[in-house]
Length: 327
Image 1 (cartoon, helix red, strand yellow):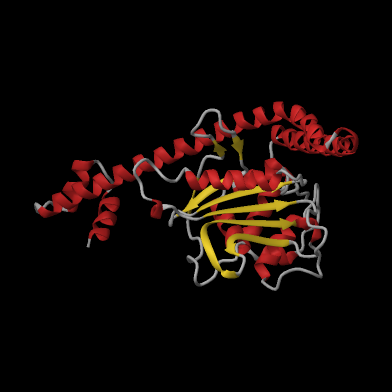
Image 2 (cartoon, helix red, strand yellow):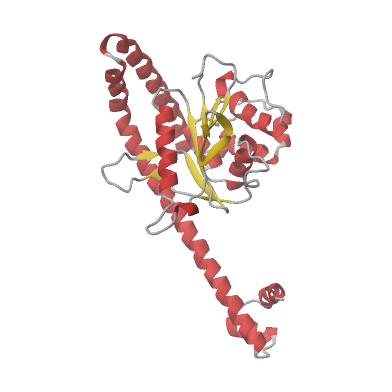
């Protein structure tokens, strides 16, 4: 049995952008939630990954996965295959945009909920330290316990992780191993990883046989694009010694525009599906609420369950189930 690499754009979004139970487990095990902070994430709703600006001349961007939990906290998750100096600025930009867009016209600032940015980076960007887990908040430099809540940023340098520096938390270690040990067409998986039910589910989704030929073709094209970007970046950095780093970055952007546009269209289609599903669930919820109200009213007038089932064209078992929830 062969597995695909979870760091690929296709596999990452398939696992974490379509399976909320897996994403919840990942977030709960990677984020440093404490007793003083809100409790663990229990339920999420996916949000559009297109960060469309309110001002049409502002910058447009796309993130990998974005969601909110029942408390209103937002989570922006990105998988970055290589590092550029501009990536932190992009992360700050996207997180700030998600934070600001919560506030509608006339709403008070106190209604704003925290935004967490989680960034898995497949490259070393802090060479001066062996630490790979970097958690940033807005803090008072003279008193690190004094925190301005609202924005938090987590960066994990995956390529620094090895068996000797894994965290003590078992499930956090398993998730980090999930991203570092599973490579393209891996055939053997350590049984310990499967002890976490969410990781076991993710591994099932990563099996090569679970993908269509079209998806496998897209998977390969994603790797080709990464190799091109890597080559362009290396070449641009080399040329940057002579023509300046800023000028060389333009070379990368010109090559990436077509792929970004294609990705944007894919995200539009995905967000449309999410919105359609949300509307369907909302319609179903309203229908169920109407049924509950009708049954409750009928009971108040003394109607028997059999009569209610006949009038509402519902199975008697369903009517009895709803009645049991009314008491």
